[in-house]
Amino acid sequence: MTGTVPGPDGQPRCRWCSAAPEFFAYHDTEWGFPVADDIRLFEKICLESFQSGLSWRTILAKRENFREAFEGFDFRKVALFDSADVERLLADPGIVRHRGKIEAVINNARRACELVEAEGSLAAFLWRFEPEEEDIAPQSRSVSPTSERLAKELRKRGWKFVGPTTVYAFMQAMGLLNDHAEGCVIRAKAEKARNAFHRPRAG
Image (tube, rainbow, N blue to C red; front, side, top):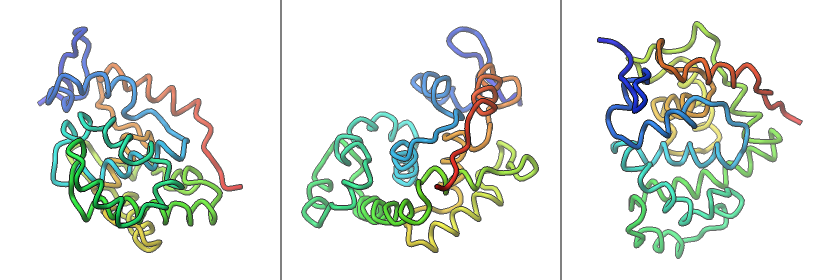
């Protein structure tokens, strides 16, 4: 089975795009392109945790609702959420109303603030886990040794809902590796972006 499917323009795209029409735009403009912005990185790891047990289509369709509900995923603001905010979010039909995941986002926002204090930025910390080429899992897998190490480190720092599968999906999406299929028309564009990307460093 080939790793690609024809896109709307007839050019090959990663096979997972065929699951929903809206995946093509997300795939072509976001997935696999490197990100250094702390807010975007925090948003993505939160959305990946919400996806656990669900489809990415569900989360993508609700992404703007999530952004509104969680103050644009500004973790400094989310860190100030309290029990009243949890109840507000549990009553919000525009998001996934799962108490454990909502509470995990608030917890992780507080842990993100601590991490920035310790490391300078989320990006500087997370990009330390950019995998070596030989450490990248094939597309048929959903974890890698690096995602297991990063998940373990985050959990050690008190983060929740950040298992190695969630973390690997995060790494794929945020461009810590180029997991576009061989033959995908976007693979070379993502690689060009990664080559031009300035890896954030602590301090």
